[in-house]
Length: 206
Image (tube, rainbow, N blue to C red; front, side, top):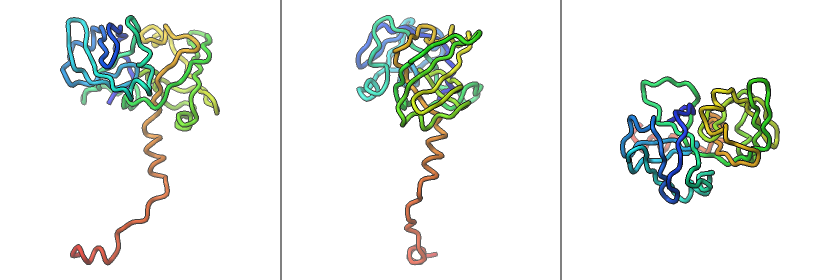
């Protein structure tokens, strides 16, 4: 599990079914098999080198995220899995990308920048105003939502410490909605008819 608080911006050194990523901070306590959130996608570390790590990437991940568009020199947001005794500064992030959005507008709003992102209805249904959304692994708060897009307001610190500082209109971003919304929807679905009956209980000795 992750929190959406980016630890550093890494740089892609090699692409393909394995990503080689140049990093520093996330290497301080890293082991083979660890999970690293890369642009919001949970990847498993399979190799550790001097100043870099390597992670496997499944074809499904490449198809369902913006990782397939990465090239040598691309910058990516990195976060290690949250330790059990760590601070929960963002929100619950699983590292499973729900969809890819497209930045349609970036405008200045005082010290902040407002990013507007178009997304499919299947993603938008789980987004609420003032709720949490993950964009390329970054935990953010929604400031607008309609039937076609949503918007987030980005403070200067987040702009400077993440890849958002390099984003432009037309760029694709990985989106993960608040996982709690999906669980609530599932629980509210019409329950299936129970197979529990008095006859069944008697057969089982009750």
